[in-house]
Image (cartoon, helix red, strand yellow):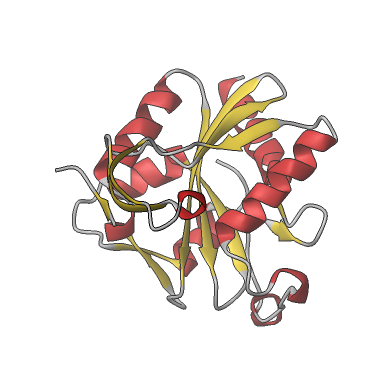
Length: 199
């Protein structure tokens, strides 16, 4: 048991694109697919990006047998930041990955304030920061730049991000086997867009 502490071109999708299913990764979680993608990037010396371990304080362990120790109770030492970070083309990369079974929207209740604040701090330091959102039913994965997310969150009445907003303001990641989610191709577009805005 774990206890928690107190300016680029829009991507438009057609109905046929939404129903395309990648059978190679069916049943895999978003985290599993991202971990395999990161492994692919690292073995080819494209990027070094890792899933961050969440610091856990073990409180109680059950020892039925010496070889079968089992953690019975543990606490997160502090609220986690984002899921992934690393380096790509000399840029610091930091992102959170979320998956939803909802067909039309991602509930913002699934994105805690401390994660948003961490993303904001990384972006202020010049990091490449984004949110990866997977719509499991449609087998679609979006990369939403933090700047777009922050503008969206400026309206406190918003409770979710619609798939239509993502089609207009996010990058759609290509799905396959090598890598499972080619999100760095979309990071390249994000970098190109960011650099052109600065010049």
